[in-house]
Length: 352
Image (tube, rainbow, N blue to C red):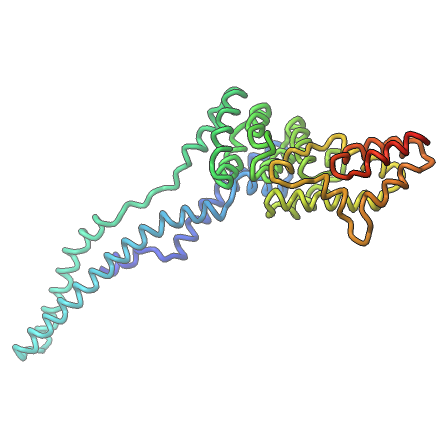
């Protein structure tokens, strides 16, 4: 009986087994990335990101394993009750017969052992077999993709799932798709039409991808959420933005990004100001519009005591630098529907 009780794994043992299994898969993926030329630290980071939410995977595994533990604990409890009852009955019988000597105690122990030997195989038969961790059937499909059409159709199905579920599956299956063209096809349903609810997290996969075409596509799409172009900027600038917004919903992430763009406009001068004014020509407003966020209105009127664009636009239009005046006219023209003063400002600028 003691051997059976010992076989009931503790919660700590179950947690350790799950962690060991997850660590094995992460280590294998990191090893593959190292073989592809990624440094060890970055390989580990990419492996964790592409595996998906470790907390969610760990929770699902724990629920499966704890079900087994609860069943064994119930069997354990029943066996204990049976043994206690047997001991009480045998003890009561011995007391009634006034034969509480060594011979009776030996007989009592023999009966308990006999009862244990009868119950133990039954308990073992009732205990559910330990199930190995099996891959999600959806994840298996990633490795079977052959064409861009298949990848896009599959990703469309995933994009229709609950947002976190779709994100976790893409992150977990990303590394199984070895063709960069197919990885691009997987992303498109998640960034079209204003973007998926977890678009920023998914585009981070592309931004870290070894294929330059996939990275270029990722940064092109991220530009519409970050309101800045990371393609030609140092990598830490992108990581700082991503870490700041990764836990925000898209509306709040866009609001933060537009505010940061406004701050850069206030601080920029010379060539940097021309670059920031020109950014309005390439940013796609659809992600903001799809979430009810009027980015142009927010950009034009915000600023507080530091002053909004309405306050600074006249100075740009009166500048002696023809490049700045031209860039300012193109920039301000985008806000015609946001501010009634814009048409008049532009007419005055053309008279000069």
